[in-house]
Image 1 (tube, rainbow, N blue to C red):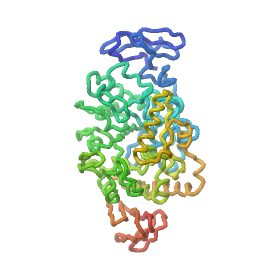
Image 2 (tube, rainbow, N blue to C red; image 1 turned 30 degrees about the vertical axis):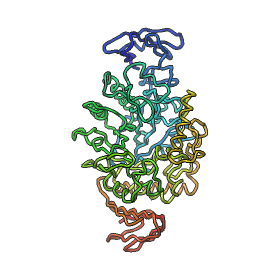
Image 3 (cartoon, helix red, strand yellow; image 1 turned 30 degrees about the horizontal axis):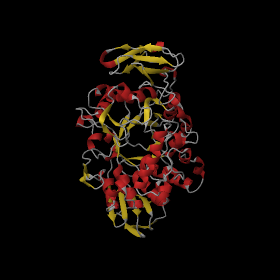
Image 4 (cartoon, rainbow, N blue to C red; image 1 turned 45 degrees about the vertical axis):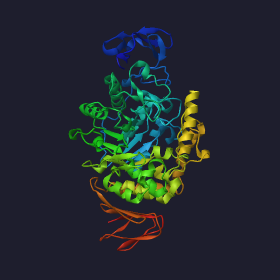
Length: 565
């Protein structure tokens, strides 16, 4: 347990720790630059803070909280007995990532229940499990991107020890585990940071409605340290093998050293061997260039261009950001497979400006490829997975292109067996005004995208959350069992590829063929077609119903083929 409780409150003249059980107030000792201190030996049970008599307020760095409003509890991390001393984080080269939401991954929705399913992921061929955010947020259920107790694992999932047991179990199986962290904004409920100091820009606001985090203004040195320490906290006390940083394009940082670069430098100095993955829509290769190449030092980033072009080609959707991929989408899929970024300085109609730049010398394996994510499934009004929209064959074809691309592939939970359950947007805000605004705002947003009002589920309804839970009993039933075998076969093919091998894509009308190493993936979105094959002894790698001869392959309408040399 830490020996001293520290609170940064530069605007306060006095800070007190209030013990919940006795209502005793313990004055903290003022130090330099707005820091206040108190030995933790004086704190018993739950506690909260008072600033100049006002409060009670939760400790911004509390490691365990009853709710986003407190009370807070001290944690002795030394009490947990880790058994993963022989585990070393694996690099992303050769990785197969699996994104999951703890609350809906299992019927129980807990860390311990998730640990019980890890063997299935190991057998599938997964190497890295990526958890959606687990820092405490308002209520019992939510996606996690509106957390406010940034250092405290969500109690509804199993709290501090439950999360440690999950990581420990993953390491026992040789799996790596990555945590999604959110540094670009905080949720609307329980966000008390502004009471303590200049954590936010008062004149700038995020797309999620809150104020922009102050990373470059007066007092930003301590604000930056708050988030940098948060990253170190998850790595040091929970043994995470990687961090995924949410929406880094929303980090407004005009400092000489960007927060991402500082994070990469700090963790490198600490000799942490794990991976940093950024989510960015900037198409800016600086994010994944090394520190030695004047980059930000992220090991990889999510890249939506392949997903967006694929989805537009397969579904015909052209609303919102898909409008940028509406013209010859198969050609854009081919460009994404070969070059990573589709937009490399062209005019984006969606943004109303020129967008992006070339990947340059950054390797394609530093981009994450996916046909589905929590965002792209959850932002559908009915939470439909790709297989629900396009049918199973086209969803499999998309998975094949992703899995055999030079990028690092990622699956979204349930995709491996084409789960019948949706993944909807759900919340549990206890504040009536926030709950009402969330329900109305969600409906307004989705109807504005073309959804029928009757298709929009109330995010506050318990049923919305319950419908989003995976049904693991499907695994033994067709077509889910066959899809699971298909996914396992695809992953096995992927592991035969050299990560540094590039591919070549060709488009002829509605037929896309992609050749990489010893494999060809051909996707036919038009009428039945015949694809001439390069010279060689090609065979069917995975049976998709295509007919092959010595020189060509015949693919039915809407079908696909996977061939190997």
